[in-house]
Image 1 (cartoon, rainbow, N blue to C red):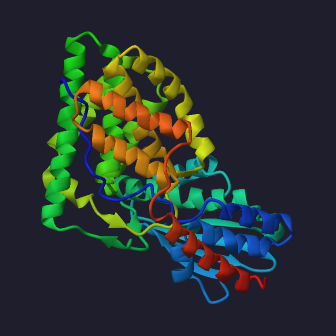
Image 2 (image 1 turned 90 degrees about the horizontal axis):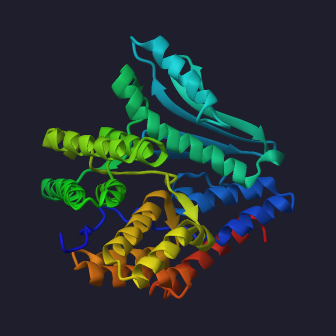
Length: 396
């Protein structure tokens, strides 16, 4: 236990951004200038430019966009914005408890859209006059439908025997790739258990929960699970991040979760490891200021720990905030590269060396001295081409 935790490459580069965050200003400007229809079209392009081109009609006023196991049908006219997303088909049994649960969801967490019953299908719906299609509101509508659709589809299928209406577009991996990812999953869990036991033996209990959080985030980052594995992982992360339970109870919960994963048949785990086509990332888009606000408290603490040569504490502090931001946010590629490179370089290194690598990396982010990524010019050219397309579309 003389070295820092290990880093394993992610199955997906799931924090990479698809669009230039500056384009959001175009979206807002169009709405401010009384062009709500054009603003809404631009918002869809901002959200996912690849799917915008792939699944829209020629006028970019009607879209049928897949997201996991739901299918968003989006209409933009001179009068209204509407979205409809068929969700699940009712089962033959357990209908009443399922509908009761749907009614609860319509109160919370859903805010703007609702799940309605159409014949034998549950459908997400939302409609508003085009004049009121304010960009932040429409983004939230789409985000809620996609993230809650992802959250509850597998849950309702497992719990109530509901049926999918639309089969998600997925990409399976080879058996060798699946075996590699499964072995990484077990390594992350075993490493977490070993470090927790070690810190408890040293009476350094205050490090144990940090190891729990880091390890749960690492599973998401490295494995990118789907299906039931994703559901139970998110449930454990939500519990850990929101509960006010005592420290020891939270650590015990995580240890039980780790053991549950280790005792799950290997094939069940592998069945939940695949790539899936999605429209909106569950991670919120973070500007540089958002990152700084998320990291500033940790930076203050890590600065003190680094100055005092408290290498273990400094390393764990930075590991926590790095994996925390990877779990909750999408952000500019240069900051993603900075974080990933620091995690790779500090992986398995002695505590002193790891602390130096991680702290100096965090310092570069906080002082905004992170170098630009080498592909930035190519990205700019691509964005300019997209901008030219929209100039034609909007007659500018």
